[in-house]
Length: 218
Image (cartoon, rainbow, N blue to C red; front, side):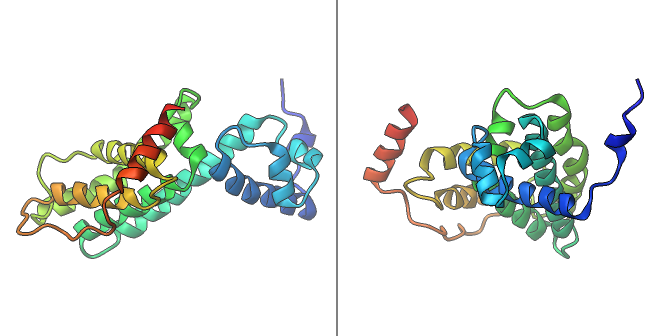
């Protein structure tokens, strides 16, 4: 059946602005509250009625897909910026650090990547769009003698998943602890390691570690 012509008409300027406000608000609310975020909270953040949210996004999945796609777009832009750096190793380090930070700040994105709800199309996006760009940085860093030869492009999402899980465990008690572990990972990726990179944050305190484990068991 042909699409209804009414569905193909461009949005009016005010409707387009409302849609953009809803997406901006949803990015904030879902990053904070995860996939169970309330659409009432999205409406309040956007300054519109909840009915407006449902008119623009009749199904929650539509909104989640838009947010995920926008996040991947931002990662692709980041990867292109890092790949354009003169030093491929520094570009790779920057990408790992910034991508890990962004994932750590977005609970919904982590839940999509690590949970059962992602569609195959969503999970194909990073492989199809990000892997070729990150792969160029990896090959460049290897060619310059900075990166160990056995590091693979598919190791990158595994590093980010590891750090995301760490952030889920310790984020409430030590928000920047993932940076410490990223430093350990990066040192492990160097082909030649004359001296260790200074840690960017202090070790987690025993009481904070105990609190993190307790929270994880709830």
